[in-house]
Image 1 (tube, rainbow, N blue to C red):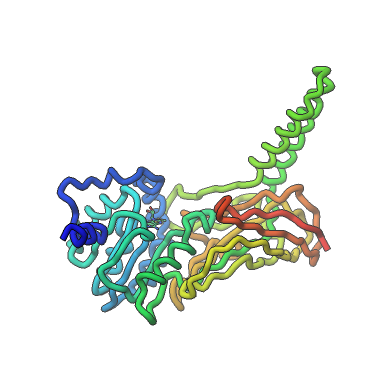
Image 2 (cartoon, helix red, strand yellow):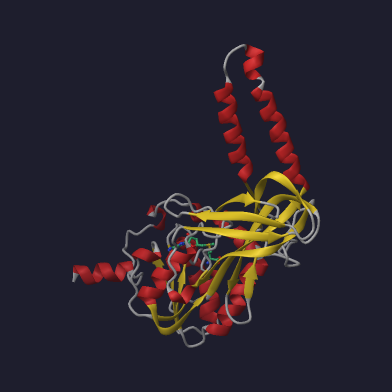
Length: 347
Ligand SMILES: C[S@@+](CC[C@H](N)C(=O)[O-])C[C@H]1O[C@@H](n2cnc3c(N)ncnc32)[C@H](O)[C@@H]1O
């Protein structure tokens, strides 16, 4: 009996009288402002709404990471037979208010906790999720969906996204070139400390150079101010320099493993210029009609992700047609970041 009750609690069907969602570990996504930023992104949210609405009628579905519950409500309104919605952060208390305010609490079962610890009372026809980070692998989309597919999906069921791929393109950026030059100037001053103070202070210069490189390596930015309309994928002073190259493609129905990888990528310059940054972006195929992407090649971009541009060091002048050889490295046991460095080039 006790075991059955605790199973019903884990599934979110029973809620203990003294349950408080705020007892869940406080996490980044427990903060409502983070979710407002995502809802502010109408391009993202409406893409999911359209794909969900086309694919859920009469189906039992699972949402992994429901946040405020908005996508679960879209699924319920579009005629899903039942929606299981799992959320690990304290924002689930807002999802509870939203589902109740919209009279959808009979169709939506909210389940607190991480999906990899959850159990469902039945298998589902569709698993959908928007756990895509600005650094695209940061929120563990691949291992989480893979776990969901293996344990919760009926044979013949589908996932949304069904396919997820990671890409890069070389860009020319006035801002990154200026940052690099400023860092070079500062490092040159620190390298003169030994001479100025009459001591061997070279190890300070070495550490400083290392810390400057680390701080330059990643540039994340958001464009979440203003209205809800999509935004240009490039900042002012940024120009696309090369063609795109694919880092990785994941077919999410095929239980992809998130193994470490090293991959050599070739970026071909579309014109002469300076390779000062590498833009990393994703393409997530929600269904046959909708793909969302943070590609700098798209005229507009969903603004909650904006883009991730990694400083290319040092900035490198290339001629039209030249090939820049990069290596992308990922080891999830060490970091959720993908690291890039130039191996040779240009050729
Ligand atoms: C990017 S937000 C999206 C929220 C909501 N689905 C939306 O589209 O507005 C991702 C949410 O998933 C939750 N999350 C991520 N991985 C999860 C997991 N494995 N199990 C449960 N919740 C998870 C996070 O706490 C966060 O609230």
